Image 1 (cartoon, one colour):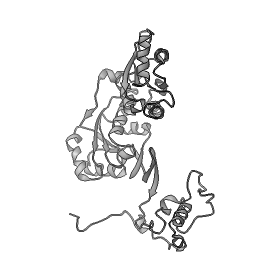
Image 2 (cartoon, one colour):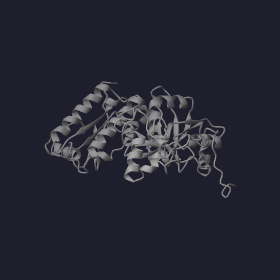
Image 3 (cartoon, chains in turn cyan, yellow):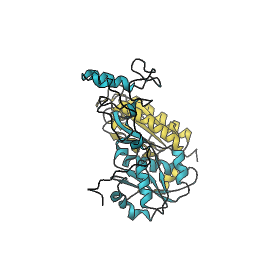
Image 4 (cartoon, rainbow over the protein chains, first blue to last red):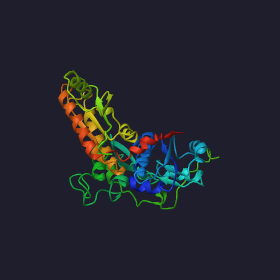
Length: 222
Length: 148
């Protein structure tokens, strides 16, 4: 999922302070799962903004609505009946959602309520960790299902650096050395030979180095 | 204003401990502050951040969550979850400007009627000293979020 965290309330207050009525839009997908921008977080933020602004003598009307997805135009159209009644929109989706709402409703200022972080997985309840950087050319088949790009601090492709000590990365004792994990996993699978194969220098163009990326499925595209 | 100020305090009380302790306090004829409005919940772990924040938005001057003693939760660890959630909301209350001191987590057993009464008295006095919640006027306006 795409993970995110709410921005500091102080920053959000400054976004909405000039407006009388805003629409606070949540998203039922990734940001709901990582407890950053679902229906509940929309309610919490709406209350928080109203109460914080009141103390500086400002009253604001906040309409709340949570879309099934904020990255698809079909769902964003749902906001149409509400959009004329508000001065601005604050989105609690990831950066994709914010941009899609802004693209659809060109005459309304749209502000992000979240800082989008990374593509990650739940390690346990309340803990999310980075697992993928969308490099566009997946290596997981060669690395025992553990990504050296997302999980090695140096994005090394062929074994650990000298900073790997007792399975931990030199940047922090809380960070596992990805190459230690890869080696342990390959060994457990009896695939040590895999470790000896040299991964050639990576072409970073599919990772975004070639400019903004797009997928076009000719069979589906309208 | 402060002299006539009667705080409104919302107490989310676990059915298995604090709510029963409140009952016990009544049976024992213990006097405690009538400012405390009790909301019975099946477990303190059921109390979500949104419940606490909405209580303040609707005019509460103070809120506390009352759960079981450590290790005594009927649902294993709901009380510990509640404690962590209260800490999280306390930080949010500081961000909002209401102040974390208006929210507390307390723990007691079902037999501690005297403790329930004492906490109700102490919390009322603490909030009385702090004064009315800075967002009380919002409750006066009775502005409801407009569900679209």
